[in-house]
Amino acid sequence: MGFISFEESLEILDTITIEQKETIELNIVDAFGFVLAQDIMATENAPAFPTSAMDGYAFKYADGIKKLKITGINPAGGENKLEVTNGNCIKTFTGSLMPKESDTLIPIENVRVVDDEIEIISPVRQGSNVRAIGENYAKNELLIQKGTRIDFPQIGVMASLNITQIKVYKKPIIGVFATGSELLDVGEEQTLASQIRSSNHVTVEAIIKKYGGTSLQFGCVKDDKKSITKTLISALEKSDIVVTTGGVSVGDYDFVKDVVKELGFEVLFHGVMIKPGQHIMLAQKEDQFILALPGFAYSATVTALLYLLPFIGKFTSQKMQLKEINAILQEPFCKKSNTKSEFTACNVEIIDGKYFCNFKDKKEGSSAILTNLLAPSSALLYTNPHESPKDSGELVRVLLFD
Image (cartoon, rainbow, N blue to C red):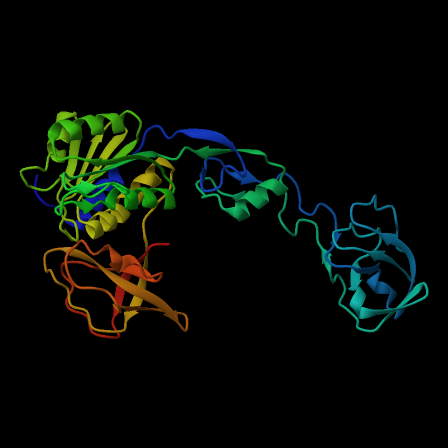
């Protein structure tokens, strides 16, 4: 199986469907970060009756007079039995139902109170400060669509509808491990100068959590076929997707690609013409997947963002990928390859409503420089194989992490 283009790899991803998407019921607060598996409809008007939007005095606008007699007090949560008559007003508080026959509320700061009367010193328009029936939402209105990721506004709206339990898509379970006999796990003591600290498995786990998956961590695995096979089988017993880093290239100790085939998985592609990280493998067996990523830290991180996000979305009925925007280059940019799609670390800032892109403090070197993604404004400049060098001021495509 030969190398394919980045576009071809995405087309293969697009054709994959998950036959059985699992759903679960959760309390609305516990559903934060999950994806809705049902539409949310308004079961009533909100508000159901005209309601005061401020503290003030409710009256009939048609009275057209500057002085009104105060005939009662209408607190929030009361029975609302009071009725406004001609020439009178009722003191009404924020959230109170408007008294019968009233249509306007004048704020407290717009009047002068003398004994049991108010004098209007700053008039308002008819209907001012009154929340109309259905202002928030109308009965039978679709409020939140199926497939929406639940954030605090969605939780608030569902609470206002007295919804306590909600059906959501179960987050895909994603097992993660890094391969390499030279790797040390976080916290493990270094005993040889040749040993290096692994960050890949932890970085991928963080990506999974950020973008809506559930992670299972299997740590670092030695570069021998028996250890990789044992860990992969264990991860597959509990996971929908298994993500590995390293061991998928053409070296003598790159066993992941062999073990994947021996476990009966169909390889959908192995090798993509991208920089960084051309040695990528995706394999499928029914509704389980193995995504094998490169071992260098920057390569593993970029390819996880490009290929893992769409998979998380497939299990939750979402179209998930990094957001692409157009940005204006603030300095020249020269591609390094004429045969690959490139993803170059850059900075993005917004000036006068426009996106701008630069490479300030970005280091040149190998595909191991993960620190290039540290800045809060970091993003990825995306160029295809056919693009020529770019001059300052030209538009480029940039992928944002949020």
